[in-house]
Amino acid sequence: MRVGLLTGGGDVPGLNAAIRAVVKHGEGQHGHSIIGFRNGWKGVVDGYSVPLTRQLIRNVLPVGGTLLGTARFHPHADDGGIDAVLATLEAERIEALICIGGDGTLHAASKVAEAGVRIVAIPKTIDNDVWGTDQSIGFDTAVSIATEAIDRIHTTAESHNRVMIVEVMGRHAGWIAATSGIAGGAEIVLAPEQPFDIDKIERFLKHRHRAHASFSIVVVAEGAVPAEGTSMHYETQMGKFGEIVAGAIGERLKVEIEKRTGFDTRVTVLGHIQRGGTPTPTDRILGSRFGVAAIDAITRGESGVMTALRGETVEMVPLSEIAGKVKYVPDELLGVARALA
Ligand code: F6P
Image (cartoon, rainbow, N blue to C red; front, top):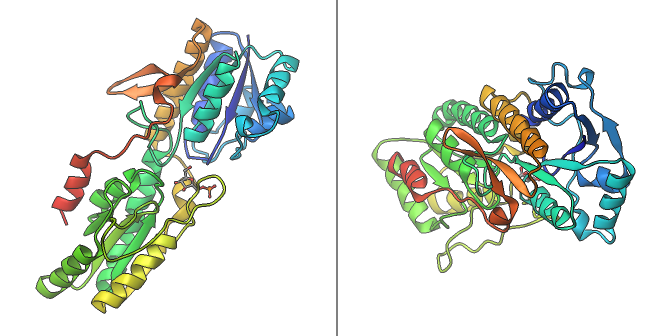
C-alpha cells in the first residue's frame, strides 16, 4: 500500500521519532511504501512529495523539529484546497494518509476524511491540549525545557531580590505553566483555565516579601487573562492562525506588578525555545508508539481515528469525538501549584 505522511502546525521535538516509526514499521513489517509530504497540508495541495526511505530516517531520534517540514495551512480554509488534496492523492496513488498535528491539523484531517480519504491522525503539541489523549508528542520536552529555565531564573531572582515573570506557551490550556511551575517551585502560576485577580497577586507578593522572602517567580501561560470585573483590563493579542503575540501578557504583568508593589520585576519569554532541540526519551517513546499504532491501524483498514495514550496503553479514538474540544488542565493540578506557593 502507498501511505502518505505529513506533519502540520507548529513543530515539536519527537516528530522525527513518529516519522521513523511509521517508515520502519510500515515498510519493514507491512511492506508499505511511505510517501512524505513536505510542509504539512500545503505540500499535499502543491503535490510536493518525497519517498521516505530507511536512509532518510537514520539517526533522527535525537533530532528536534520535523524532517518533513511543516506549515500552518488548512486546506479546507483555502479555495479549492480539498479538491487539490484529492487530486494529489490520486496522482500519487496514495491509499491512506497519516497526519501528525495539533488541533488545526487534526481538524483539517477530519474534513479530508469526510471527503472520503482514509486517514489516521497522531496528536502532537507542546500545549498538550488535544482532547482524547493523556499526552501529545512534544509536551514532555517543553516542560523539561521550561523547568530548567525556571531553575536558572531562581538563582538570579534571589540574588537581585526581584520578581521574575516567566512566560510560557499555552494558548487555551496552561499545561506547561502548571507542570513546570510545580516542578520549578514557582510562587504563582497563571493559566488560561482560571482567570486571575491582579489585586490578589499584589496582596500575595507584598505579604510574601514582607514576611519571608525577597524574591518571587511568576509563571504565566501566554493565554492567561485577568478575571472579568477585576481591576486589570487586558485583551489577548492574536495572530492570523490563532497564535498569541509572544511576550504580551508577560510585559503587561510586569508593568502592573511593578506599579502596584514597587518590586523590581523582569520578564523572560521562553517562546520557541520550548519547541526546539533534542526530544526527551518520553517524547521519543511516545512518538515511536504513536507511529507504530498509526501504521498498524491503517493496515487494519481503520479511518477517521487518532492514536491516543490512555493510561498505560495506546488506543484509537474517533476524530469526530475530539472535534472542537480542548483538554484543559484539571483543577486538581492547578490546585497543587497554588497549594505550594
Ligand atoms: O503549536 C502550539 C504553539 O506552540 C502555541 O503554544 C503557540 O501559541 C503557537 O504554537 C506559536 O505559533 P507560531 O510558531 O506559529 O508562532
